[in-house]
Length: 266
Image (cartoon, rainbow, N blue to C red):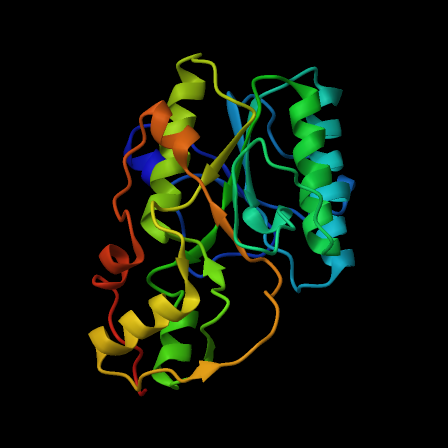
């Protein structure tokens, strides 16, 4: 919608029909089925690859990020077309578990099968062209994404020591980051092959939940004693993205959650 409002010619591709019509063409196809793509136009400057598996099962991720992406690339290649790609990935590709700082140069060798599918897709696009770019989002929050608020409202027990770090990005910053990178692609400016998109302040989950409890007058969390760090415990750096010139709408969780209404009924 933002691209359309800015005057770009937009075409959507979805698996399921929308409830409301869009002001631009939308094709309905299943990426997992190459035959369903036959009517999809190919004359695009840029393709933005944002897909959502039906579940957290590895075969669902493989079907979209490996089979689906291969089908799309083959469809464009059949007509000798090669748009620039912008792919949405995830910081789940990092397997670091001891609160380490990670950036785009850090080792991305995930143990989780779903995240390995993301890495395969990333490499496929990066090997296809140096113009293609991957954006690894951290945990997305904002309107319609109130998972942490619901946990805070329930007063859940939270790990306090050792600190378990979390990384977040507001939904509006996700959109703004994609627009920011896309405009540079369309202008022919060189981009790195990968950018980490996360706010300025990785923070222990205990600190975040305690702040949410105080701000929204929820029960204060109780400390959950554990002996080791849990999985996906790292601190993500956004230095490369900020050096490129992006400025966050919500630099920290405090900025973002002040704009989110409390969870209804809790």
